[in-house]
Amino acid sequence: MSQSFLQMNTIFISILIESLPFVLLGVLISGIIQMFVTEEMIAKIIPKNRFLAVLTTTFLGALFPACECGIVPITRRLMAKGVPHYAAIGFMLTGPIINPIVLFSTYIAFGNSWRMVLYRGGLSFAVALIIGFILSYQFKDSQLRESVHDHDHHHGQGILAKIKGTIQHSIDEFFSVGKFLIIGAFLAAAMQTYLKTSTLTSIGHGEYSSTIVMMALSFVLSVCSEADAFIASSFQSTFAVNSLVAFLVFGAMFDIKNTLMMLSSFKAKFVLYLFIYVSIFVFLGSIIIGYL
Figure (cartoon, rainbow, N blue to C red):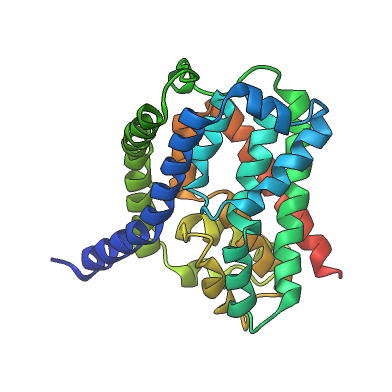
């Protein structure tokens, strides 16, 4: 068996082990939302004003300790329950970044640096807010795939029935999104094995190209947001701070595995525009940080 195949297998397993706990947490929360949260409850929490709705859900991301793949099942369930797509996406983009676990890991990885925490949290918040607002005008109808829409009503069930329903829904959701996690982990492992990091870093020494390279690297590596800061910190001697921030923000919003999970949940055109907007605003934000 070749050395490259063994290396790919090791990376594949490590990505799965790293991601699975957060996906399990995500589908469990999704199950709880499905069985215990009604459309009326959501209507009370989410403001009618589109800007305030995005602002509210963007802040809510801080309450969910989920990585970028674990947040997708939660987001699609919120959308199925009636949360506007633009508000749900604001939540999805910030959830894997501004939650306390990720910010603390960033603080530790960069030698107790509050600056990196502020740059990462601030840029992700600004990007999510801008994109949510743009999407509120660009797309008017639901952007969920038809198979994801919520057609169930559980308002009259007892607590035991709801708990049973939560477990059943979580299992169904896990198998629904799990296959895309496995495919994404396999693709990420293959790209890490056969597309050498040194190839990317060798072309990334210009002021702008370094940011693009680090964004591309974060997409390829597909490291969960709870651990990516330790990867980024190893590039401190090679790349400027703003490029590292781009790595930390872009990778937590888009990587190979969560892109496939999004495509299984949302319409392809919607995911494409989301990818374009995230790419543009993370790049521009990191250039601005470079001048601070």
